[in-house]
Amino acid sequence: MTYLQKLAADTALEFAKIYGRPPRWIVAAPGRVNVIGEHTDYNDGFVLPMAIERYAVMAADKSAGEKIQIRDVAAGVEPALVDLSAPVTPGLPKWANYPRGVIAGCLDRGLNPGGLDVLLHSTVPLDGGLSSSASLEVCTATLLEAATGKKMNPVEKALLCQKAEHEFAGVPCGIMDQFISVMGRQNSLLLLDCRSRETQLVPMNDASVQLLIANTNVRHELANGEYASRRAQCEAAAKILGVASLRDATAEMLESAKGKMDEVVFRRARHVIGEIERTLHAAEGVRASNWETVGQLMYASHASLRDDYEVSCKELDAIVEISGAIGVKGGIYGCRMTGGGFGGCTVALVKTENVEAITKQIAADYKKKTKIDAAIFVSRPAAGAMVIKA
Ligand code: GLA
Image 1 (cartoon, protein in one colour):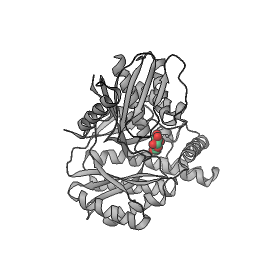
Image 2: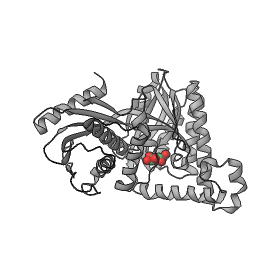
Image 3: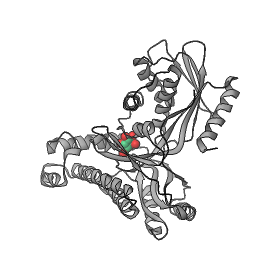
Image 4: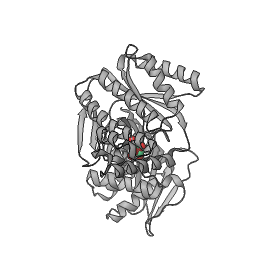
């Protein structure tokens, strides 16, 4: 039984315990890790994420009436009730604004499932920068597709979920997280052009390497406000450069406009322009199984996020430093922070044969440096959202 099959089976059993009958539908949507291409999606750039083997799963059945009831398997999480007979608006409990926003978007498109009893079981770590919110959104959209028998096209579905995050959760995120949760493919990274929204699968079949994800288990409060301010700084830089977005700018253009902009805005733009290039190079490196090159690009990405974009933190830097000290000899090609920043996870490209030793070493050294326990796991590129039982 795969990890996902077991998770789905467990969720079905829990559903039956709570609601007294088996579920009619089971759907799942994965979290993601971004291998490279950070803070480029809202600048129309490229990103290179993969779906991970951690999922939001929903089991559901029809219920009488016009309410969608969503319970969480975790004890102590307040259930959510969404009334379909009235306009769906943000409300309490707060966690349910992700599904609410998606339900509102689906209703607008004529996907009205009627009353449902739903049980949610997510294994995507919360606040870890692994897109627990996007996976919850995409899981909800997948459930509504299954329950109505209407399928949206994948781009429309991902954009609907992004809109839910903007309007119901107040987070002005880019398109990466929802796209990868919808479109992930087993054994492939996804090179996404965030301007044209075209995607290319970048096969990663080499069993000698893995992506190792280490959760710092910290999340600094400033994350949301800082995210919005980075977006504004990028827009300011694009305006000064006279381009629609930083995707259209080059390092030379930026250098010659240096005197016209604030030093901070300059550094933000330098990160984005460099990161877009690094992402394209890394995709080529993955295609060629050129792991040393990919690893170097990951370290360069981290340095740029730390120094120019200023979205790292000492805990993330600690794991990247520990990884650098272990080095290629010890089985680590590269490491960087992943996701929005200010805590959450790092992603490292590692040799499969060294995974166990690396995991132990990072855990021990990180604990020594920070007194915090990291949570470390490896994942192969996983498939995107799916219906498991219909
Ligand atoms: C968050 C956002 C994404 C992206 C990353 C940074 O995860 O949700 O859209 O902007 O930060 O790369």
